[in-house]
Length: 277
Image 1 (cartoon, rainbow, N blue to C red):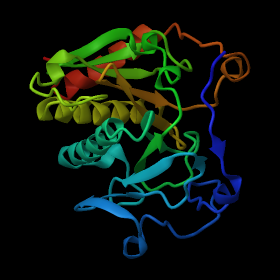
Image 2 (image 1 turned 90 degrees about the vertical axis):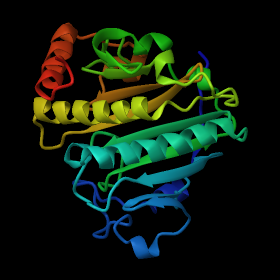
Image 3 (image 1 turned 60 degrees about the horizontal axis):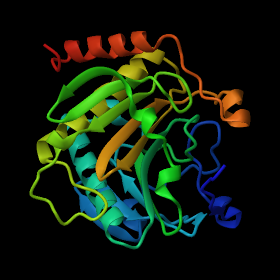
């Protein structure tokens, strides 16, 4: 079985600050200490894109997108405008990295909570450019298929019927209508239209808000994963629990029998928020 593999520099890794509850080894959040941040690439009010000080994956270039100056907040707390600005900045630089020719693969993702694989509580996303990794080994297109919940402006929201790990995974799939036919310069990835990207940001916010209320766990954790599939964007929103041993040990994917319930519950939430009439 072909796999992607990179080196993880443990000498650098042990120096990373850890501020998530239960793993803290520092009392100071590095993302709150804005005056001492280095390697800043772009700012938009309290949103900051900068080089990752702890470039643990080799070879790669790692960036951090600090989403807000509110350390103990997260996506459900953001205004709609804040969420849109975060997504616009992150997607813009992700697509720029994809098209620059320097990297074979570029990933864009978010960790939140103690089960997500992250170490910093302060809300942030990460972009990582890999010069060697094969993008075709990072996903199976079938993982983005699912029961449709909502679609508008070329943005489809569904509940995955072929989840990667197994429980209430939601997908956002951008179709042709989300893109302009005037962009003929993109070699690897297309930039969505503003109104479609705004809707994408809104639906990410609503889905995470729904999941947080639905699972009602004090250690609620999730990941956002962005994918480039034939120049078009996919996003997977995945709540995180203990990873099933069948997946860890044997690569067996689990399909929950409650998938229709996951779809209906999120649909009802969107109806309450006015997205579905």
